[in-house]
Length: 167
Image (cartoon, rainbow, N blue to C red; front, side, top):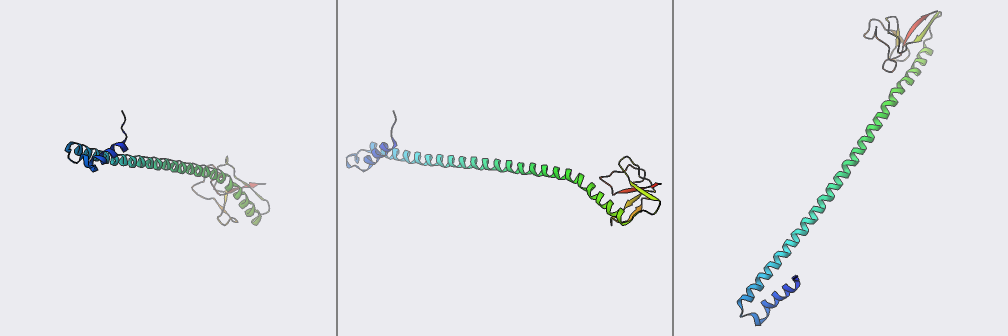
């Protein structure tokens, strides 16, 4: 048997206000108790609605936080991919730049008559008689007793180094 809250409220109101029930204490106490229970049910219903709305807000906030985290991770992955791409590009760009620097240096300081030079490659070991391109990109300086003498030349990591070729 289902009882409608509106009917109970109307009946309790009728009992407490109708003069026929004024002399009956039991009906009056029952109506007052029913009204108190209905008020408590309304308060609990409101608390449930508030808690439900709070849960929905928390769920929305959690969803938004997850979306933001996913977007941040995606941006980070994109930046890492871009950084990897830039590293690859940089691995090839200095060599092109170095070739231009070598061409410029060789054009500005041609070898003396009877002297010819060749650039070292990755299979060459640096010798004391070799010359490296100075920071001004126009002057060749002797390698001399240096940290790199006796080591293999690394074209991508070192400045251009040339070796005199006897003709």
